[in-house]
Image (cartoon, rainbow, N blue to C red; front, side, top):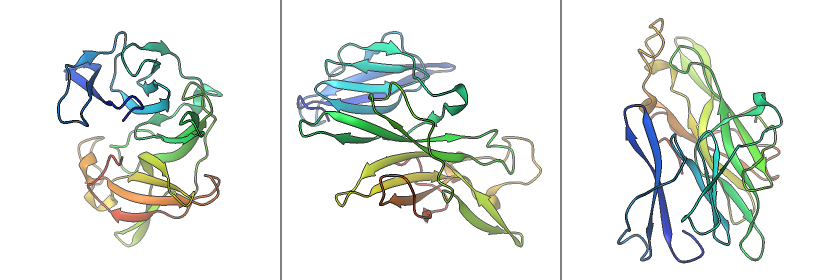
Length: 232
């Protein structure tokens, strides 16, 4: 929902091997919509559509796309990180801190790293990253040590991590992270080839909070061990 009273929706128009970001607009709260418009020069699944205030909106593929006219035209730029190793996969909603005029002062996102999640027992590692320029550059990120969930399986405790997530600031100032928890071990066929026994609809949903502006985080409260993922 943008400051001009419009709602913008961002989707991925897809056919095998091709992903084209497209946008559409509604001036009546979503009751009716205009036509889809392809974002020029953009490819890949678009993530993290964010309203920065004053008509400026942004989203990410492997690059960053920014509009300063409420999504009518777009410019492309690279996304900057302190080093290539600091680049994270990001999917979800960003936290946006704003000034009195509604302009974004900084944003934060849940990112993750990981290897082949379909190969037991690989697991993702979740991070929180901050940007002070609307997503153009990011810090190296904080890896909360307790963003894991322990599952008892076959007589031992198995640690699973988190991947995608979304952030919001609650009215009391706390940060709330909705996190996608990796698939519990009891759903894997152990010893199978990579990817054969993996189903990401069997990943779960947990919540973690921070009362010190993201420096430390509470243990994950696991709401669902499977399903209800891609939190927004």
